[in-house]
Image (cartoon, rainbow, N blue to C red; front, side, top):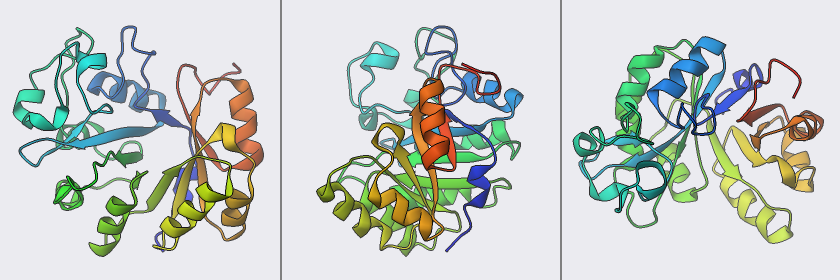
Length: 239
C-alpha cells in the first residue's frame, strides 16, 4: 500500500476554492489559484478528451458550465481549451496546465470520471502526464474499472474509492473495490457513520468525506472520518 496519511493534514477544496460559480467557477485555474493562496488541498475531476488528453472538468456534457450542447469526450483538448467556463476568461484546462500551475505547492486529489467501455488508455494517459511531477497526488474514482487499471499499471500514488451509500448491497460493492488494495476512501458525509467505513478505518484506511457545505457536515466528518472535502465556505473560520 501507498501511504495516504498526508490526506489528513488539510481541508480539500472541492473542484478548487471556487465561490459556487458566482465569479470563480469550479475546476478552473482561477479556483485552483485561490486554493493555493489559501493553502488548501485541491480536489478536481478529469475527463478524457477525444485526442487522448486528460482535461479538468466534472460533467459529461458542456451545458451547465459552458452553455453549449455536446459531450465533452467528442472534442479535443485544444477545442476545449478555447471554451469559456461560465462566461468568464477561464477556459477548460488540461491536467498538464493544472500541474504547471500548482507546482507541488498544495496536494492534489484527482478524481477520474469514467465511462464504461470507453476508457481505454485513460488511466495510462493520466499517469503519463503525472510522470515526474514533484508534489503530493492522490487518484480516486467511483469507477472500479479505472481503479483496476491504475493498480495494474502500478500507479505510484495513493489510490482511493469515491463512494456513498448505507445499505448492505452498497457495502458489498465497495468491499470488492477495496480488495484491489486501495489506500483511501472518499465517502459522502451524510452516509456516516456506517459499518463499512468503521471497519475500513480500523484497518488503517484513511477516510475523507465529500462534499461538506456547513458546520454540521464538518462535525459529522470529524466524528467519523479523517478530513473533509468542502465547498462554499472558509473552513479556517466557523461557519
